[in-house]
Amino acid sequence: MPRISELDVNGRRVPVDVDADRTLLSVLRDDLALTGCKYGCGEGQCAACTVLLDGEPIKSCRTKAGEVGASKLRTVESFEREGRLHPVQESFLRVDALQCGYCTCGMIVAAVALLEKNPNPSEPEIVRAMNGHLCRCGVYGRIVAAIQDAAKTMREARP
Image (cartoon, rainbow, N blue to C red; front, side, top):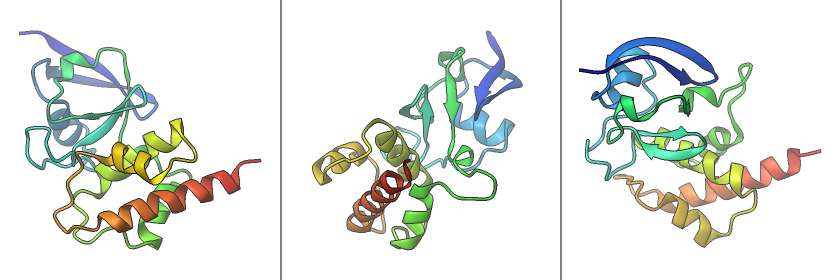
């Protein structure tokens, strides 16, 4: 059975020794201790396991480690810099866009991807980007507000 010996995760090449057929989610959580991505449904329906693959949000529970190749992976753990949270993370806290928090990391990852491509998304664009992310606590309105707040903060911080 083919094996994977290295992944590019959060800006660095990381040695691994894993079966290529294992899910990316299990490799990130179990082998690399990156537990921000969560196991929710295991079927790609809830998006709690979202990570970025070359800047695109993917569901790591449905992605095999062998499919990643030399692509660059980013997890929610990569967003904090020098002790400071990413503006999306700060906005989720400020706007209280979480309750139980289980879906939050996947939502934040998807929101960061959206704002990296579109620094001023409309509400329908935010809703479209977050489509498929399930929040069992139902704080969708606050999630949209948090992304709008983060977009504004990020635009104002630009030189």
